[in-house]
Each structure stands twice: as C-alpha cells, then as structure tokens.
Length: 210
Image 1: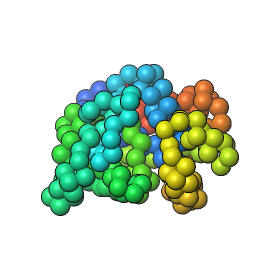
Image 2 (image 1 turned 45 degrees about the vertical axis):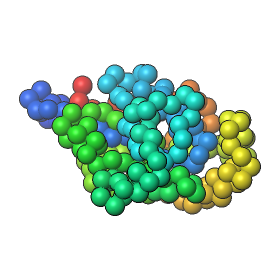
Image 3 (image 1 turned 180 degrees about the horizontal axis):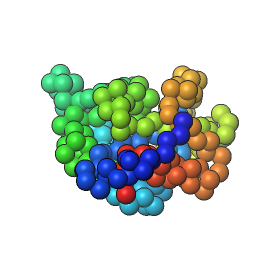
Image 4 (image 1 turned 135 degrees about the horizontal axis):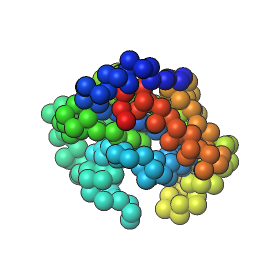
C-alpha cells in the first residue's frame, strides 16, 4: 500500500491545521518493534511515543508517562468498568495493556500530535476503526521463528514459561500481517529502520504535513 501527496493536498496544508498521525507497529514479541520505534523517534521531527496504560511492572529503562502509565490491576479494572479505555487486551496472563480514551483524543484531535505506538494487533485494528484516516498499521516480520526465539532469550529477563507462552502466540500474530497497511522484514536493523522512517514521512506527506 503506497500513498503520495497531491499538489492540492500540499496546497491545502498551507491554510489548514495538519491532522494528527498515528503509526502503530504490529508484530510478535522480540521482533524489534521498540528498537525500530526509538530509531524513528530520534530521526523524525515531532514524532513521539504514544503511552499506553499497563498493569505490568515497569522495566529498568522505562519512565512513567513516556512508554506507559503503570497502574495496579485493580485500577486497570476500574478503567475498564468506566469505559476509560479505547481498547484493552490481556496480552499475557495478568498483564493488561490499554489505550486511555481521554489522553489519546487530546493528543490526536486537539494537539494534532504525530504518534508512534507498539500495541497488540487487536487493539491496533480497533484504533484504526476509530481513526481510519490518520492511523496506519505496520507489521514487523521476523526473519525466522528461531531468530525470534533467540532475540527473546537474549533479553535475559524472560522466564522459560513466559518465552513459551510468547512463542505460542506467534502463529496467531503472523496471521494478522495481511490486515496491516505495510509490512517490514526486520532482518537488518538499518534497512528496517529506513523503511519505517520512509513510510512515516510518506504518510505525513499524504496528510499534507510538512
């Protein structure tokens, strides 16, 4: 799927507010989504990560409000009950992730932010239904299942049971690749990064953003 900005679209950008943009990376755990996301944030002016709410504990390199809002399982349950989330998923047993409704509406519809996110495929599909014109899903593919497992093991923070649970999800996750707008094979980090950055610039141009 490819898009190009027409002259009329570019001219319109001079007189109208550039809309928000939401880039969502899809793919199995360990495929390199977070690394690619951080490279894109460093390279694309104005691009920032969309924080999500999660009931899991923070990792050593994460900050509250940057990658996630870390909440208790009880608080997450309250957010579900009060319809405060656009979507949520139990990605791993006892680990919930969700997109807070008020915060995302503020960022996209009021601040017209350019956001990039790494969320579960079902949640990503839900967001594209809510914001179809400005949301693009990009599937990140692993070179092989053996390489994917090796990358997860290399993190050194995943138990054998958790690793097996993640690998068990992979066939289901790979099946969603055809539902995404773009696909990138992450067999070479530099090439995959440039492909992602090119897509983001192309989508910004499609929307008339500079």
